[in-house]
Amino acid sequence: MEVLMSLNALLELQIHTVWSQPQERWVLSTINEKFKDSVNWVLMFQNCSIDIQKFRLRCLNLSDDDHILQRWMSVVARRNVKQLYLKLISHTPIQLPHCLVTCQSLVALELKFEIKLCVVKLPIYTGFCRLKSLDLEMIKFLDSNLLGNFISSCPVMESLEIISCVFGDFKILEISSTSLKNLKVDSGDTPEPNSDGLANCEVKVACPSLVSFNFITSSTWNFTFQDLNSLQDVFVYYDYSPDQATSEECHYVMSKVLKGLRNVQRLKLSTGFLTFLNLAVAKPVWFSTSFYNVKLLTLSVLLNWYKQVEPIINLINLSSNLEALTILIDWMEWDECWEIPDKVTCSTYHLKSVRLLDFGGSENELELVRFLLKKGQVLEKLSITWLGGEENRREIIREIKKFPTSSNVAFTFYNPASFFYGLHFLDYDSWKYS
Ligand SMILES: *[C@@H]1O[C@H](CO)[C@@H](O)[C@H](O)[C@H]1NC(C)=O
Ligand SMILES: *[C@@H]1O[C@H](CO)[C@@H](O)[C@H](O)[C@H]1NC(C)=O
Ligand SMILES: *[C@@H]1O[C@H](CO)[C@@H](O)[C@H](O)[C@H]1NC(C)=O
Ligand SMILES: *[C@@H]1O[C@H](CO)[C@@H](O)[C@H](O)[C@H]1NC(C)=O
Image (cartoon, rainbow, N blue to C red; front, side, top):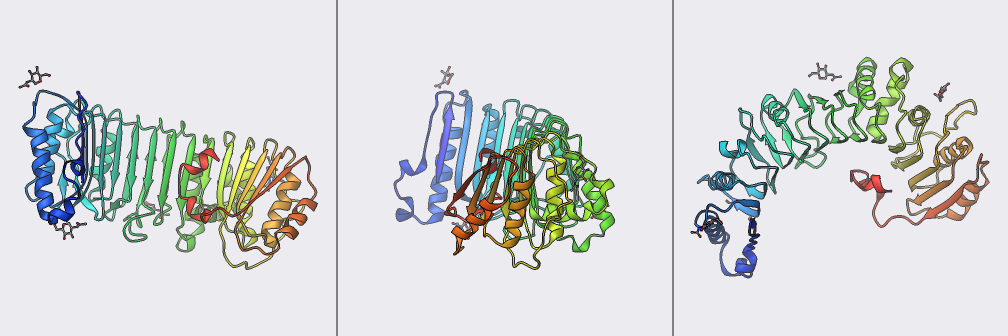
């Protein structure tokens, strides 16, 4: 347990430095009471005319029967808090107090729960007039209209993160904001898999100022992107299976999605996304969008069937200014050995660097390498990170170096990462710097 509080005069108070090893001295309920007392003391009995710049409260196992959290939030709001960071375990629903929502000083708010989802009742009136950054974690939202209105009514919000939250059977999750620049929705890690409540939901994102967008879900692929003309960095992850979708639906959804993404510079897509893309490719009219600005493309791919390779080639072809391509190979039993026909064209006028991760050296992987080396007129670097467990690396390397190239390519081979790269794919920031 820890209370960190900076007043104008920069006061920091940490509970565990006040009491060393409280767990050895008291039972949890006593520690909780003592903790509450000390926060009360700091907040209510100190000089109340001093503004609180930053208030950080961590890790209290709160059973908020006495609405203590609401009271603390009210007190810091009245004391003109600018940054409020709360991370707790709560056993009762939380309501944001009116004076916090209408607080004129609040710029950053973090409301994170641990261990247990917490229902947060959102206000029905507008507020947060100065709030620039909002981070929410492990919250259960019950009302899609309230959440949508809440987001769109924060007039200067630039950054919104919604992590491991559950949307109670939403039909629509609407994120519209004229000010929002960074948006991260990651429900890949909810307490139960595929339980983020988005299974029958349309996700609608309309944010003309949005620059960076990460969306991770395992439940839906029904996205509508509107007014995303400022978008530069995008990571869309879904691993939903298209089995239940008709090809008409696929075309319809993919065309909306692709149009929304057409200005991006850095694009990262999951295997699931490419599976839908593959179905959309069948009707080129839906795939007429070009990605002139994409410089960095990162894909996780399955290479079992040739039809999984087509969307990759198409995407590269449509990204006519692509400079760096990273392909993470998703592992699965090979079903078929394919070859990319010679007649397949693919423009790569600017592609200088290709990285392949979790490379196992199978025939399909080698065929993809052969194709990229042949087409990469200006390719300078090809780097390969082994999956691990390949017995005949030397032979594979020899084979790769024998492939005809259109330019002078420097090859690098890396030992397997200490981690399985597949998991890091979900790490939204890792790809930007690689
Ligand atoms: C409380 O703080 C204000 C502003 O710093 C100061 O003017 C006032 O004297 C303080 N009051 C007490 C009781 O310390
Ligand atoms: C938190 O408190 C509840 C009772 O209020 C108790 O059942 C639970 O075990 C506690 N959890 C932790 C992590 O201490
Ligand atoms: C997407 O969601 C909308 C709104 O719920 C619905 O009308 C539409 O049929 C959905 N589309 C697909 C392909 O599931
Ligand atoms: C690549 O794009 C060109 C037009 O720029 C097109 O003629 C060609 O068919 C495309 N190749 C593939 C594999 O789609």
